[in-house]
Length: 372
Image (cartoon, rainbow, N blue to C red; front, side, top):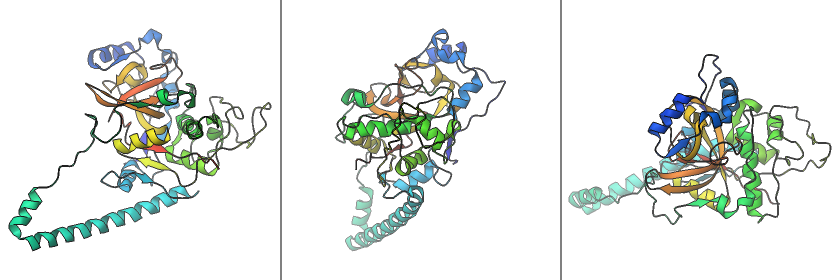
């Protein structure tokens, strides 16, 4: 598996993703959601190439950390993995993977040896009966609410709406990785200080200065969190958004805002959740998370409801901020996310996506604010 969630190359002959035939097919096939009529969709004014450029190249982590690698790292039982590392987070992440893999193998060997020994002591007949009477293990597949102590519905829009910040506009720059990362840390500072630290961090400063990512051409989600641990973020008033790349000057670009204050993710708190249960617990206990996904043509036409892909090709990769979940009688588990395509898109800037669709719940990524 490659590291990038999706690639999109400009094609001068491509059809516009916002078109009547797409909308009409959505109406026929998508019972759980409704499309926006073409004449009301502001994306129709942008060229197909511009739309693809704004998706950029989205990745979860550099090539040494593809999605299957991260899932293996968390364990086949779906254990939640929290990185215990300092500023050299990615190297420590790789080392921890091999440590956990070795530990998992050793524990499995010990368990198998013990089971064989117990079976032999009790006799072949009794052993056979025990082997056939394995306990049933319930796996949350999103179809029905599991009995795990978590609510059927949760949303930071309801619990702490003031901490989410307003819906923003990334424009034509493929800066979704910067908007979601800066937004994640901003939200969590507010949540974990009961609103005492109310700062909105600058995605533009990350576009300008995070050299391990690719500015308006996209970025890695793990690398963006690692940047916030090492370099930190600055208030958006210090470096306002300009919908494009700019020079990293390590000072405020707005002459009226001189304080180049930094806000950090706490070192060693990179969190990667890989199961529905652990994504929900991290989200509910600590705040919004980052999620990567593939953007399909029909997604650009979304207006309301619980989205699931029904028609169209891949447009590119994208990242959004996960803020909640719920259950629908027909579709089961869905995720609630905050986008940065203005309030004119979707449900006033938000979207609900069915579990398992377009790669939305492969991983949830987050960090804790450094409050010291």
